[in-house]
Amino acid sequence: IVRLIFGLLFIFSGFVKIIDPVGTGLVIQEYLNVVHLDFLSFARVVIGVALSLLEFMVGVAILMRMRMRVAASIGLWMTVFFTITTLLLLIFDPIQDCGCFGEAASLTHGETFFKNLVLLGCIIPIYIKRNNFRRASSVFAEWMFISIYGVIVLSLSIVSYVRMPVIEFTDFKMGADIASQMVDSVDNEDFNTVFVYEKDGERREFSIDELPDTTWTYVESVDMSMERDDLPFEFHVTNAHGEYITDTLITVDKPLVICSIYDIDRFYTPKRWMAVNMLKERVESQGGELWLLVATTPEHLQEVLGADVMERFEVGYTDYKTAIAVQRSNGGYLYINNAFIVKKWSRQGLQADADLSVISQDFDKVMIRDIIKQQLIYEISIVVLFLSIIAIRYLCKVVAIRRLKSL
Image (cartoon, rainbow, N blue to C red; front, side):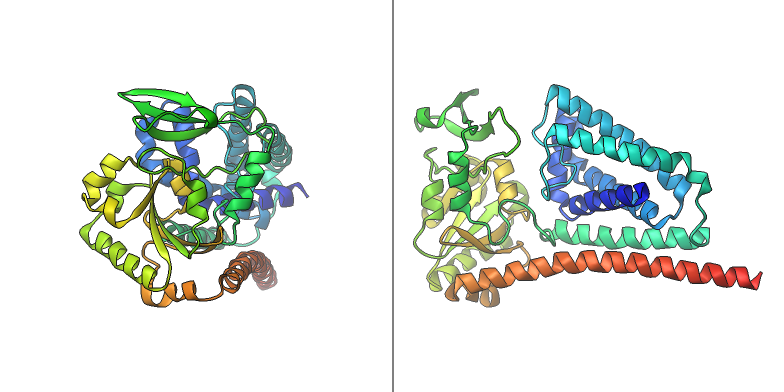
């Protein structure tokens, strides 16, 4: 029983993080900031993927009863490390979310610590009895089977990084109602956000009722809620003058396509910018409107893209974390209609002629079709994973029985 509990939890935890490498990298970045290892920021995605892959493979090995001595030892050390880490989070509260289940589930520090205690209670007897488990197959076959799973999920992670997560759990997934989530946040009695602005090198915090004049530059919004159980939805967008325009953005009375850019320097090339300009014309020919959502300042945007960008485009400014939550693909697109996120494309995945035809279609039908499609991908992935585990276990059993008979 404890082997099943531990294996399934490690598989789930590793899988939901590895298919969202950019989001996992953000969590790793927060940990690096806390322990003052910011110089490793360049490797945050690699570190996040490596840890998630190791967690997934340990879960598979323990669930399938393969390479138990190695898997139990690694699983024990990982669980001890996670338990100590979450205890420190519970005591000192340096970051908002431990990120143990990525965007798929948000736990409080207390819940996360309790979860790790349960895992610790599972892995200790497994570790103690690690030498008593009979091998499921030959050493080579066991390593091969575990490696196959590793290669599969690593491939999914690479696809998710290059394009978009194959399964998305963020607040900005397809079908999300932005307006409704914003209302829920405002109605939350524990909701208290301050807005950080900068002027002449000085940073100050302002409440929503006391925002500064346009000489100040918006930097980010910070949640100051005392209760972290139900974090409010955060989508703060301003114009070039620092004025709040989120409501204006999501209530545009026509189909809206947003190009979300969280790193303008890495995004910009003349070829890509030409593609955005061509896309703008095609969106408008379909009766829609194209906005840029950027995580930078108006001055830097103009410096990178040129002086005419302010005249040709409607531009919204936000912070890095919001832009990357809106769209994991740097320079990717999302189609919003009536405050619903109808469809999303990676920067490379949008074929203007074919994909933009959805703008002229019934957005409810388009959105429901894609939600069902993503739900099917999620469910089929789970079914295939566990059917393959059962099949491999059966194959190992057959091979083992034949070897015994031959002896």
